[in-house]
Image (cartoon, rainbow, N blue to C red; front, top):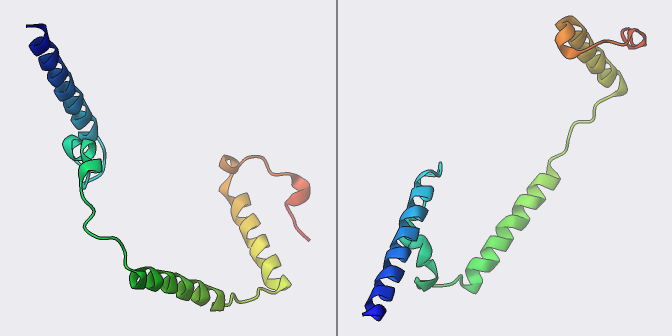
Length: 112
C-alpha cells in the first residue's frame, strides 16, 4: 500500500532529522543544552506562570538601584602631572620592549 509506505518514509525522515540535530547539539560546548526532542517540542510545552506585577516592579526597581549606585560612585580625578608621568612611564616601558612593538619614531622617544 502506497499510503503506509509514505507514512513510514515521513516518520523515518523525521527521526533521521532529529538524530542529526541531536548530534549537532552534542557538539555544543554548553552543559545544560536541550535534547533535540525537547528543542523540537518546546512550543508545545506549557508555561507554568507568567511574572506577576509585583515581580516585574521588583525587577525594575532593582535595575534602578544598580544604576543609581553606579552613578554615585565617583572617579578620582587625575591631575595633569600624574597623567604626564604615567604616559612617560608607559612610553619608557614600550621603548624597553624592543622590536616586537614596532619601530619607534625618534622625535617621540623623549617626550617633553
